Length: 215
Ligand SMILES: Nc1nc2c(ncn2[C@@H]2O[C@H](COP(=O)(O)OP(=O)(O)O)[C@@H](O)[C@H]2O)c(=O)[nH]1
Ligand SMILES: [Mg+2]
Image (cartoon, rainbow, N blue to C red; front, side, top):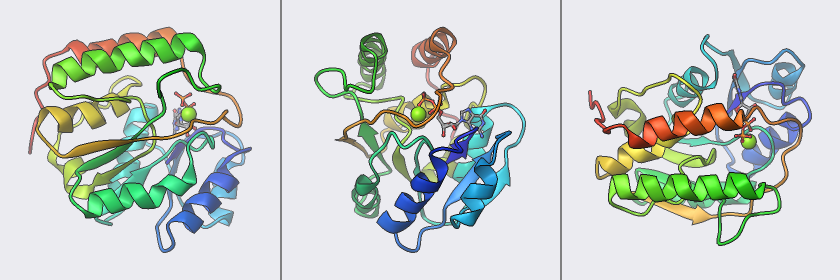
C-alpha cells in the first residue's frame, strides 16, 4: 500500500491485512508528514520512503518491493473489505493474472458521491469498449496481481490515475482478469482525490492508443 497521512486508519488496515493473509509481507511506501510510517512499523509493516513524483511512482515502487509471486494492493484508508483478500489471492493462484474488486455496483454506494459514481461508470464503459471486454472498476485500489504482470509492462507513472492502466493494459494484452463485487466503506481521514484533474488524467489514459510495452 502507499500512504500519505493515514494516521487514523493505518493501524487497522495493516492489522486487517495481516490477519486476513497470515504470513503476508506488508509493504508501505510512505510520503506522510504525520506518524503514519511509525504506526505502520509498530504494526509489523516494512516501511519505505516514497520516491519523488507522487502516488504513481510510489505505487510502482510498492508493487516491485517484494519478491513474492502474488502482490495485493489496497488503499490505506479502510474503504476496502479485508475479508476479500484470500479470495483475490486464490483467484491469482488458480490462473488469473489480475484479480480486482468492483466498488460500483448497480447504484452508488453510500460512501461514494453520485457524481463520482456516474463518472466512474462512464470511465468503465469507455475502458470496456477500448479493451473489447467488460471492465467494471478501473480505479479500484484493491487488487491482486501475478508478479510477472508487474514485471512485463513498462508502466507510465506520470499523473495520478496509474490504477487505470494496471487493469486496462493487461486487459488489452489478453491477460486473464476477474473482478469481484465488494461493499465500499466510508474512508477514515481526508481523501487526496482531485476530482477534475484526476478525471482528465483518467480520460487521457482511457482514450490514448494502448500500446503495452512488453519488456
Ligand atoms: N506515498 C503516497 N501515497 C499517497 C499519495 N497520495 C495518496 N496516497 C495514498 O494512496 C491511497 C489512495 O488515496 P486516496 O486518498 O484514498 O484516494 P481515493 O481513494 O481516490 O479517494 C491512500 O492510501 C493514500 O494515503 C502520495 O502522494 N504518496
Ligand atoms: Mg481511497
